[in-house]
Length: 513
Image 1 (tube, rainbow, N blue to C red):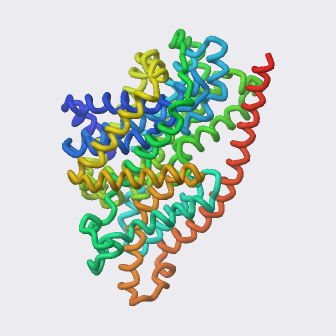
Image 2 (image 1 turned 120 degrees about the vertical axis):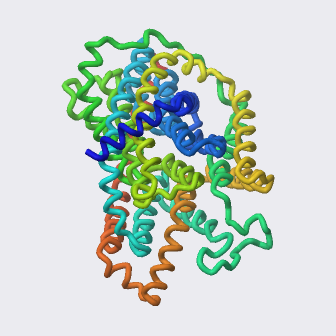
Image 3 (image 1 turned 30 degrees about the vertical axis):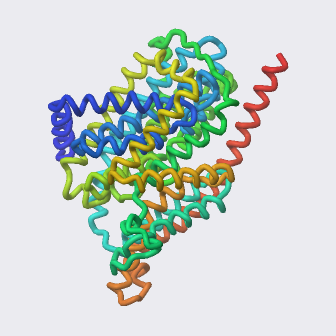
């Protein structure tokens, strides 16, 4: 009952401040715009716009970032449906049936269903987040240094799920990220480490320049590489709104997939893209007409879109309650909370309920805004796909420079971000994933500090991690998570390979016709 009262109070707080509503609208709109442009992910959108929230009140800045998160995950479906190129990885499952619908002249209907499904799934995920997160946080208040160390190790097992095609390369990338976290003052003794005599590195590698380098400058360099070979595309959108009968028939699929997405997203490391494929497979398995999947089934659009937006709320649960990001975007949001002076985890729920519940309320409002903006602006967003990459790339480059400079007003940070971007670009060329670096930058300091504090408490006796029940449980869960994630990693690679083969066969058949 108390949670409901606090949630209603948070809605009142947001509605009493027109700027909060404005920033939700700006965030959702910007997120859709970023998401529908192939190659620009929700992670990148949040990374680029975090610096613009520094001068805002924390609630307004966080509401805008959550709007970008919500809109970015949905926006990827637009390009997936229209040109068979998902704007974000989360929309990869949507194009399987969305693009055939577009070829049949029903692109508008496919976008309309994707929008409604995104609203339903996102609302379910946000409500589950608001109901479960406070209870999980109460449990987290019993944590000490050994428990936080074990939790960080548990979170680092997420590396397996975000390693892309090669687990070895993902682990190498994560180790590189952990190495970066050792630069700067030692957190306990205050002794400088690996600064190479530079005063600018005494505080370590700043999070925002690293983030912008990994996801901003690296994308600029990739765009420059393919600038002359990427053809211009033209998109056409017809009638947007599906019939009431069609929406009604799809509601059971949307509700089921939204719940599945929220549960999948709440497991660190799985995220929206995994949730979308899981829901798509379940929808096909339980469908009365499974033979239509892959040929333009409306359920094939509704299920993954409801799931990937449901996963946004689910992924926020471990980030807010335990300080462990559920996916790459929530890793960025975790950094944003820290920058604004709030440490995600159990203490956030004890000390800053004035921030927690507006986040819950804002996540719910983001879904409502997404519905209206998505349906009302579908044709406009579709036209964004036609923007020449030669125009888009300089804009991204300028945003990267402004964003990396704005935190400390230091050109060193700009050069640092650019250097990290060059490194991330070459890592991408060698098929090394960069998300494990981001995860290591966030969880590495947490693991190091709490490990050393625990050993100081136990006088260098490592058994402290196994004799305390909660830390022991998390370490056991970390081992189990590593094993199950590895199995899912292998299975998902096999599924993706099969889907790629099916799409290739479909393209070959079309070309022969």
